[in-house]
Image (cartoon, rainbow, N blue to C red; front, side, top):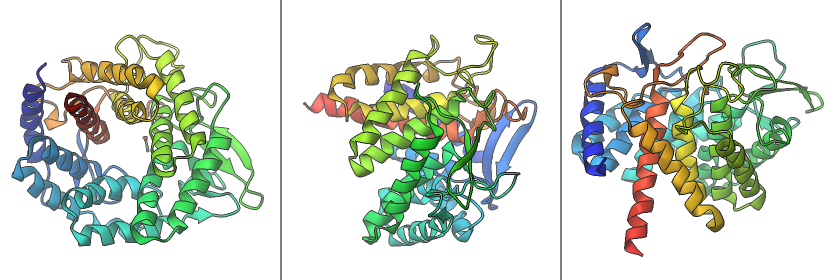
Length: 369
Ligand code: GLY
């Protein structure tokens, strides 16, 4: 499909989404026919994605109404900046305020992200060398793979303030996660629990994946995206090598339509739910990685294009006026918990729009050469 036509359709569908966004502090989190529309308050890790998607829509369309909506929904989240009970501040603030600052340069946005970064580093334990993920559950010091995504905000905070403490935390967390979450084949477990007195791993397990040895699809995608980003921010070749290794696993095990099933080891493949959110994340990270690895540029771009071709198709993209305005169908949040199986999720849409933007930037830069 012609890109202009696609953006115009996404614009219409997301305008319908906007109708579901209340004036209150909440934003839409997920939608399915069975569960209806579920909302995210600033207590939920996904609350930054809808404003982030609105910033991307503003960039993709140039339409002022998106800037207005993005601004309103970004400012809703400020109250979360002092929350020390979550590791998700990077998701919450970098997708919303991060894009707001990148696009507008307004100082107030910058100050909020620095405050959120200050809050996030309070969750770092130097014996473990990582940021703690969850404060609930039976673990001593749980760290989930998803947490590498929160490091992007910390790298940014060091660049903008000149204080290396945020980046030092990010690098330590990335290195410790690389050493303990990952297996020989380039896959990772979801959660590592650490002994707080020694900093050594006690247990490696899953929470949202099939089992402790399996490759939960979104976990692989978080890790992949995270290490591509770590390479961008540090130019440390260990991260680049690692990102390439994860990419090999993901591409070698991709299904025909390139959108992962919810877990690469799910026993009923091909009759298992898909996870479009993992597909969108992988496409976005592949576009970025393609610019760092000249020998694989074409292969990575081709694979990312194939993912987007699937997501753009009627199999994964909701018809205009359906799906409560969410762009994509068929994501899976937590299959073992029987929550959000084959639904629309706000972060799938966010990374889908980001991937489309990256794809357009790459195609435009090739045209100029
Ligand atoms: N960060 C939670 C998830 O990926 O479901």
